[in-house]
Length: 168
Image (tube, rainbow, N blue to C red):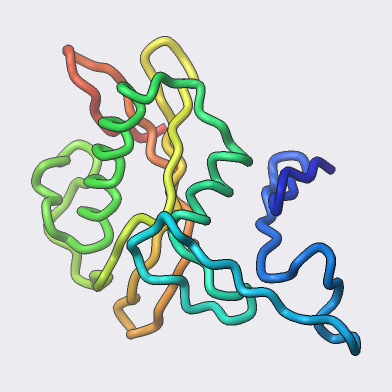
């Protein structure tokens, strides 16, 4: 088990430890106090899961990048994350699916998510021409339930002089 400032990695499982100050202990015990982390860098709203405290997207992004550091140059990683975000949001919302006919075949989606957004993202090269992006996302499901910290992995491959999403 590896602990990295609020992140615990157990093999390939990563657990975010949030909402408790390491010095205050268990909030169920007398004398313990609950600490709510505040994001100063994120302009996005804090997450709604009160069991983990109020945590902004910037905090989630820092935790993800600590647990899964990139091995790409920032100038390459940023456009790849933007592309992976477009693909994911097209899949979730149905808007823009036509841009990725090989990756998102078929017609428009029948059930779509609302207010979908990517909360955190990181990309890693996994081969000479392949990059794997890991995204945490939030949105309102077709049945009206607010979901957050959902995971998605989108692989991108450099084909015909451009990056494209590919199925594994």
